[in-house]
Image 1: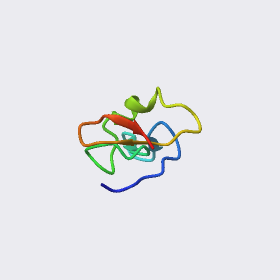
Image 2: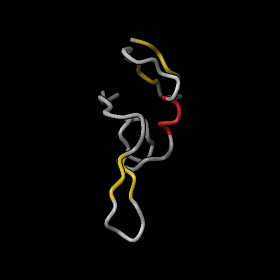
Image 3: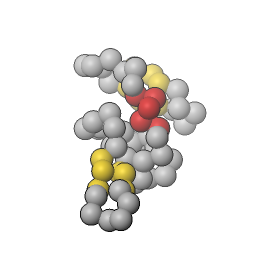
Length: 62
């Protein structure tokens, strides 16, 4: 599994098209590089802690 350092807890928006394109910034999307809403699982992460997610989406503090 690749390691991703997230820079934010939400996706990055790219605008100048007719519709916005959302790029995954959490590393959890199954539709990389596009956001699929998986970042919502990071809402309960505590600041200053590092987590990894297994293939089933379970969070583990490392």
